[in-house]
Length: 390
Image (cartoon, rainbow, N blue to C red):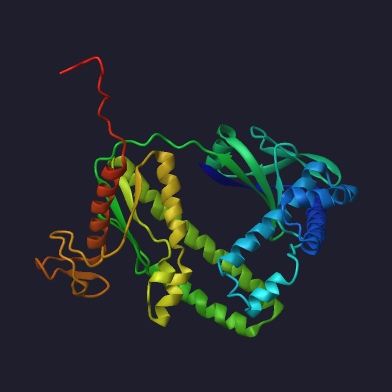
């Protein structure tokens, strides 16, 4: 399993100047390579390398950095092709799609750049790095990070790292290869029902209310509308800062929720059953005021956090079909859409049981999780001995 830890670099003023000029030079070369790729229609890594490698090297870019520049451009065009094919830029002939396909990809002057083991090294105990720059190898650049991140950096195999310049500060995003823990045989499952009014409701009794976060997001939405209407450069800068702040807050909330769910499952030797939410934005039909909440909440992010935390802890994880979980009675399995009286109340039309709607749905998800696990797990029955005959 791949994970990413973020380090904050603490370069001296002189080191910061060199790092910034290096990023600028690398992205200028990336834009030149992108122009060549677009004009020659050479979008694959090796084909593009034959055309531009010598030119990039002659501009003073190191061999490994030059290859990363070319790969960065090739990957950007691969992503563009995938988005066009998926219809993310509109249908064939649409103005937006024509505009995207009619010009080469451009990179911001301070866009991130990739490093690998050949041009970046770590001194974990001293908390410093050494990396390639335009002025040669820069040594002893200090960094800070959380104790957990430092421990992971020391214990796991490191892959590529991205040098990022954001708000005048340098960060290093380091990818790590983390081994999954051995999965135990679960004693039942905790079902997790995801929603907007309640971000997560589990069959074990935990409810993560979304009222505070939703209220914060509505406030940010109103402020965003005012800043967009203003349209000045300072308003646009403020929009970017507030957008990042909102993302960090939602991310922190999802981390807290996922950690508690996985910790409870591990403590009770149970597994976690999640809804399969692929395509939920296309399937669900909502009134206009509800669409904003649906599209602004990170459904996939919470699921990803639960997934990777479960894999690290060895907690069994299954995904189930969420169809009719909110209309099915967890007591008698009677299905009727009228049983869902309102957002928070479920009254079964079959047996008359009254329950919290999200809790009822989470119990159904837990039940389905057990069925999915039993259908897919490996048998523990020892193989028959061919020498023993009945």
